[in-house]
Length: 270
Ligand SMILES: [Zn+2]
Image 1: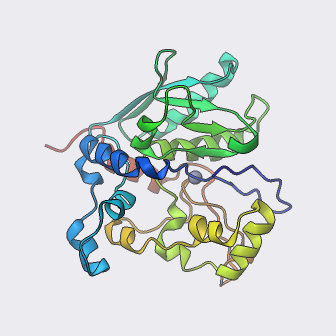
Image 2: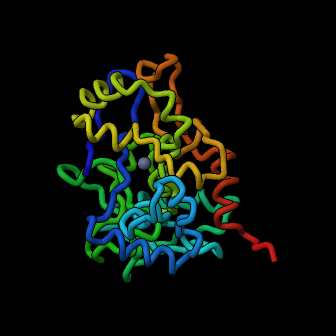
């Protein structure tokens, strides 16, 4: 489902929806992710404990993460329209910010780029990216990331906040705000009203995008949630039970850098 950047009256809100593959691709894409990096496979024994039954192939696929190989992520990047050279360089610069402490690099390529960036509006507009290895399941003439209306006139702060966030999804990082501890802070009624008014989302969409606690994946998580992560939504205080905003990340923070370095270390421990 695509969303459109709204023009909220209060603090700017990143309206990002990590793109999900069509459901008929979930099981093959999960198998592919597990082949690329076996750590993507969820712990079936623990799933069975939680579910009180053996998990189905679809349940395993839903909980399969989409990380790249631990030895590093080096992806080629192309553009589906014709942004000027200065803009292409600027986007690559922000994508490569993730390489500061981790073994990550993005390089422009005109032949069969793995990451394909569009700047479309309309039905497929907004800000989004497919998650990690899922980008390999997208047809080669289709975008894997959308940065609606980005130009050289877009404020620098949006390059930090949006381009780096979407690149995080391409690296296989989900939304930090989906972590159970953060979800627990949100008032569901306020959230449904707020996202309905500002994004046009149905109650079911708000539940799926913002409120679903991902109980089983929280069993797999190893790091505490970081409300200042670049991968966190900005959630206004009007939405939370305690009235305090979840600020979200305006840039990759030290916890994000450390997490990326753990996932894709520059030097593998032997
Ligand atoms: Zn996102």
